[in-house]
Amino acid sequence: MALEGDQRGAVIGHGIYDPDSPIAVRAWTLGDGRPPSADEVAARLERAIAIRAVLFADGTTTAYRMLNGEGDRTPGFVIDRYADVAVLRIDGAAARALAPKLLERVPDVLRAVGITTLLERGDGDDRNAVTVRFGPDPRGGEVVVREHDVPFVVDLLHGQKTGAFLDQRENRRRIGALVAARRTAGLSVRVLNLFSYTGGFSQRAALAGGTVTSVDVAAKAHATAQRSFALAGLDPKAHSFVSADAFAWLAEAKRKGARFDVVVSDPPSFAPNERSKPRALSAYRALHRACADVLAPGGHFVAASCSSHVTAEDFVATLDDAALGRSDLRLLELHGPPPDHPTLPRFVEGRYLKLAILA
Ligand code: SAH
Image: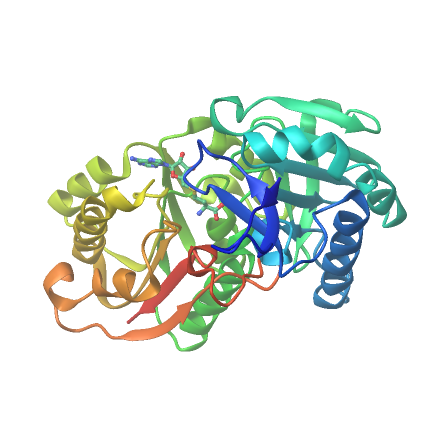
């Protein structure tokens, strides 16, 4: 576990060593500080929780990341909160091997802030394996949470990541505000949400008065989205939910001459590793061209990327005039991860989430 020595053999820090991982060492302390311990993990988790207590002091948001691995100085360990249920994810074999010892005090820290059940989601091939670490098994694995007071359904057992894409919370709110502002300005609001998953962006756009078409390959995600629509007082039948490949659907929409006033694109990561980056950048350019082809004149284009190997500047470059095949758009806003997904200044990959708004 110790990260041994500079060339003269002096200790330069302590971390978790995983020779078979692309991240071979996850540093916990620099200098000759002590190796990670259960007390240190508890102290770092308490600090992370105290920061969230300020972020979410108004009580309108009940789902957020409590502990963000490297960004909260606990590399290898992530905890998300969904109301009274917390979901732990452990990254890598080394962190997993050390977990029984390092996480010893975590249940007490979580119970003290009202967590009644702690689940653990597997990673890699095991992503859908869920074990109960303490507390009652949440019935059916579904919980209703609120984001800025908007209720939505999360499937803790089958959902992606730890259940939902919590990192897009502030961006979902931004899309709601954008649709509302277009209406105030007297503009039309036909919204296309590509890669819509459980309909987070769709729901906010619909609440703001938009008519929304949601496209995702996962039919099951649409069922969850429709339940969240109903929970928020929306009629899902007034909107369309299409189970299709987004690329094929866009080609067909272009052929038919369909146009939308707001197009949101939030695809899965195109770059699983550094080597696939050039291919990922071409894929973004092609996707962005297809989105631009169905964007009405005067429309807003919202493009997101969660590829950690693609920087913000790389991503913005996939939205240039040549990529879009039109020269009437400009970059209005560029957003990164929200504050419950903190990062360390020099850990660029931690800022994997990018969202650009063009008009
Ligand atoms: N915007 C969502 C998160 C999107 S995650 C939110 O705010 O919650 C990416 C989604 O893309 C997943 O739901 C996945 O099912 C979907 N997906 C992956 N490949 C796809 C494809 N080729 N066509 C359509 N959807 C796809």
